[in-house]
Image (cartoon, rainbow, N blue to C red; front, side, top):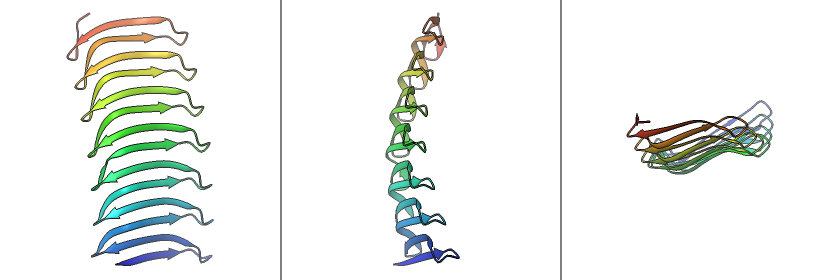
Length: 170
């Protein structure tokens, strides 16, 4: 095993990466010129495996991913610079599987959607920045299936349609 290390003109470390048999293996870390760590990934035999984290220049974590054998596997989380979570999704063997949620910068949820094997499956809901629901739709195997409702910003329903296997029926 060997490592590669880079330093800047102030003799501060900016990169540290570990290798085995010519492939990344172990951790890879980067720092900005002020010495704040900005990225940490875990590797196994040249593939991402484990956590993948990023921080902004002030040291606030803004991204957390999980990998298994080079593919997204587990949760993906993102935060803004004020530490408010803005994204949460779930992955299985590189395919989106489970819920996907988004929040605005004030922490108000604006999206909730469900996935199965990379396809929308279940409900999809959206809200405006004030938290008023603007959409509720139902999905099956990436096709609209069931009712779709839309509301204006005051919460008044303005649309209702019915779907079957991606075709509007009413």
